[in-house]
Structure formats: structure tokens, C-alpha cells
Length: 114
Image 1 (cartoon, one colour):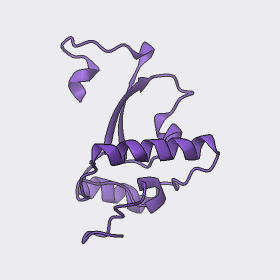
Image 2 (cartoon, rainbow, N blue to C red):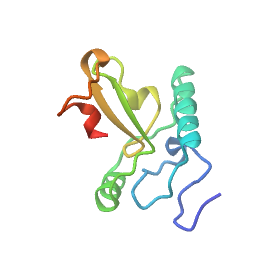
Image 3 (cartoon, one colour):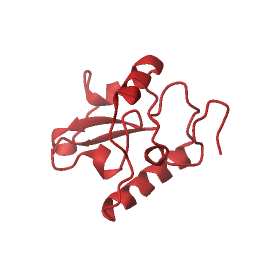
Image 4 (cartoon, one colour):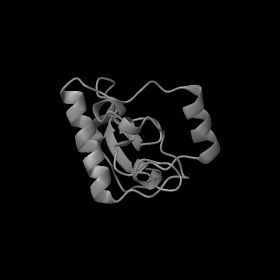
């Protein structure tokens, strides 16, 4: 099913082959968590569905702006790219990478970025 803007409301972003922009509908927290679980399951099974990013997708993100459904603070380890682990497209998740997964509430910390 589609809303009036043509965004797939019932498909994980990677399955719709559309980037998530600020022009799209809001995603409920439960739906966002399900997107992550489904994407991780596709990764585990070796069946990712996110497509290559093309110039049209990049232009759409530039023109419409980003609106990720999830923010994740994760490890800076290059062996663990969260976009790959959750089978997402640009615009789906906002990732902050941190060495040692330590987050403080001090001024200037990455927690302030959220």
C-alpha cells in the first residue's frame, strides 16, 4: 500500500528501493525496530535487498533532506558497518560511531548530536 506521496508504508526501506527523505511519512518506533530486525535477518541469511545507491537517490536526499527512522550509537570498528548489518539505504538510519562504545553526557559528547 502507498500513501499519497508514493512511499511504501508497509515495506522496509531497503525493500522499497526508495531512499527515506524528510518528505516521507513518519515511522512509528515499533515499525522502525521491525525494519532493523528484518534487515538484520536478511544480512544473517545472506539475502540483502538494499540496492546500489544511484545518482537519483543521492539527488533526492539532497533535495528533500534526510529523515532517518533510527539513530544508533555503535562501535567504530570497521568490520561492523551498521548500514550493512541492518541492510539499509542512505537516509534510513543515523549512525554515530564511537571507539569502545563509551558515551558520556559531557559537553561535546556524541550524545549531544542526537
